[in-house]
Amino acid sequence: MFVIAIAERDCRWEESPD
Image (cartoon, rainbow, N blue to C red; front, side, top):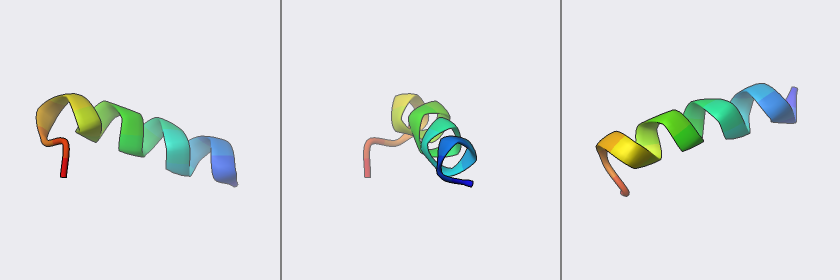
């Protein structure tokens, strides 16, 4: 599911914008 992948990346984006 793309939604999950995007949500996981969004959460990590706040921690590490890599």
